Length: 178
Image (cartoon, rainbow, N blue to C red; front, side):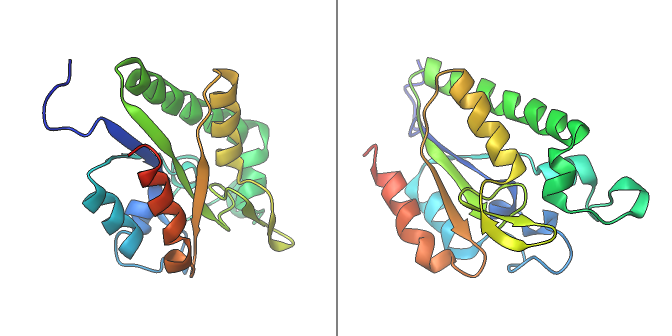
């Protein structure tokens, strides 16, 4: 099955890696996709599974929360309704991973965006304290759902203003299953 030209390798990427238009106002650093990182993925021949943007899907493009009251994005996604939205999106991701694996595809890992309140892997943004150690609300939900199904994947991250510096980690992920 699936003995055609496809690589049978996929990588999960956070939404804004391929679509900066989904970012909150003043936080887009590219007109479209994240430059070299996106190009490396395309050039590698790996399939790219774009994750949904939990901020856009739950809070809207303007990230409106609580009828205009400004609480942090991470905090809004950590409240019961936000957690439920993240969990539902995470369950859909787990389903896709399971389908790929069931059919012999290699799921190489997940690329997040450090500093994001939703998609940070090792660094997230806190409303009152700026960036700090921790996982974004959505990445935490994805990791928990994967672990709940016994699925282990490497999670790495690019970061705003550090795409070139983090490119080596992306290249290593792509070569891990070569």
